[in-house]
Image (cartoon, rainbow, N blue to C red; front, side, top):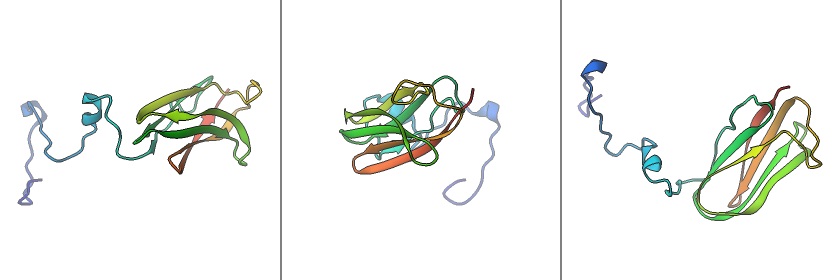
Length: 129
């Protein structure tokens, strides 16, 4: 759509280059790996469902104390994966499907929560065997 409200259709094979002015595309972060995100974000774990392990990723806008924990559906703590101060930027860690005693947990739905900068974000993850 153009600013005038008119719509223009262009064939895919005629497109050589597209420029986005003033539109965040996500490519900015890829061009500058040290770029800090504008907000605390929790990304979906991958793979999900998983077996035997999954990667949890999150982004921090500032250096802050971070806790990453796994809970069962009733809210019981299964394992604390991390509790440390981290720098701004993207971070990843892996959960191997074990509890705090090193025992494999059963198949099912679990929650992972990331606390950072006074905010807690959580997502579901699914372990299948």
